[in-house]
Length: 84
Image: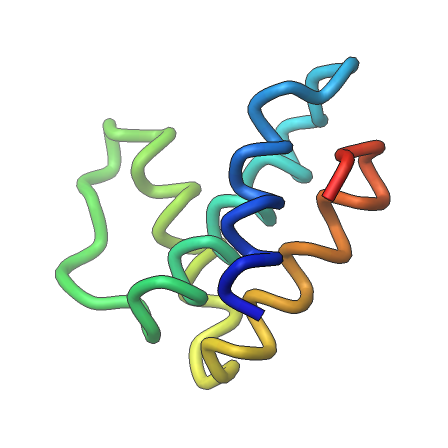
């Protein structure tokens, strides 16, 4: 799974179309969950909108196993047209 996950992480950088903001947040959250596990640290401040959105997206999938997150990441990259 790790090789496939790494291939997906590389493929996401060369997608033909830029993913939507929601898709980008989902990619970020699944990547972080797959590599780091559950969200940690404190939530960014109110004025750090991007940081706060990323934190909240990652927080939503708290408890998902790292293997499941990696599998869902690969699936999402494929659905976006990534060559994995």
